[in-house]
Image (cartoon, rainbow, N blue to C red; front, side):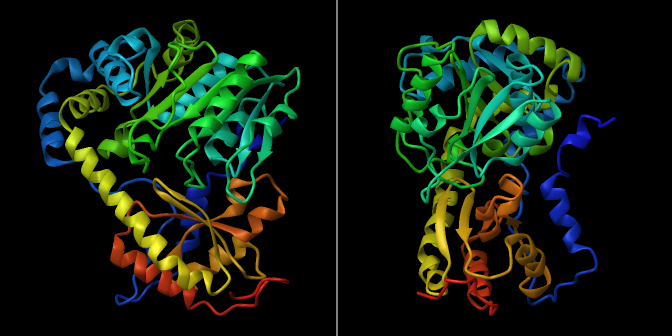
Amino acid sequence: MTSRTATTFRPPVMEARRWLDGVSHPPGRPLLNVSQAAPVDPPPEPLRAAMAEALSDPATHLYGPVLGLPALREELAATWARHYGGAVSAVSADEIAITAGCNQAFAAVIAALTTEGDEVILPTPWYFNHKMWLDMSGVAAIPLATGADLIPDAEAARALITPKTRAIALVTPNNPGGVEYPAETLRAFRDLAAEHDLTLIVDETYRDFDSRPGAPHDLRAGGPDPHLVQLYSFSKAYRLTGHRTGAIIADPTLLSEVEKFLDTVAICAPQLGQIAALWGLRNLGQWVAGERDEILARRAAIEAHMPQLAAKGWRLMGLGAYFAYLEHPFAAPSEALARDLVAEAGILCLPGTMFMPEGDPAGARQIRIAFANVDADQIAELFARLTALDRPLASGAAPA
């Protein structure tokens, strides 16, 4: 008998880390780790101080409400409405559930929407943890191919809908592609979901690093929508990755089903992470704006260095939030290339094959660069190392 976990692949980031075993890097050429989109710096000092103070409160160490601390749900509801340009009353605390990270938010929503044998449409390249959870749930991930710009098309998705389809899951700004989905793209998917009585799941983990001024979309312009679920993470904005705090914004009827999942899996999200998220929402708006500026500066550095790589036959497919998604010109498939880069160039990155259906030839030509933990100087060094690669080219690939 095959177990639930045996139906899917090994965690890609952990798999890539194993490539480091037995490989040393000289002091003058340290490893550039661009494999994972998780900030390695601690939260800002004022937030750490607030967390330390919270540890003296006995309530911090107890179970809390399954759907999250009421104060955090209320604050996120108000913040969410302001971010998207609506009145505070446009989002209710009853539409908010706090989860142990955004991955758990996705898992809880899928558990509330699907049963074994159902289908969920995922654009490719996809976020691998979404695919893994669907595999382990007995739910088929139906790949929706994207074009050269990595933007999914709602009409192409329409052709994939069957009686078993329950949801369409999008990530914007995208992981792994980095692209920011246009408002009209999201609107078209929302209308498609409503037309077929499906749920549109929009994972907005990287919302705080969107390069566009103002609200990135108007999906809630008409108020609460039973066909829309939004997901969020506090991990990136406040550097709380180890405290596992995420959120679901959805119809209260769906959240009553989500509550069953959360109570069974974790009972509640970690209290300290929730307290930190609440403090961050109330006090760190300007600090997060500075973090966004830094990420946008790194994005600009990648754009500035890309011509030297393009001259060698590389192509930038997507760029935004924490990610650059590249097409390489070499004959070797991306998985072999990514492994070789560890020793050959001192670079740890993920191959496109980790974000694509097995056997999809596009993944063999793609790699993902996560630049959350490399500054402008390190980005310059990264591009210099990639530009210096001298390997056999794929058929038809040639330097510009």
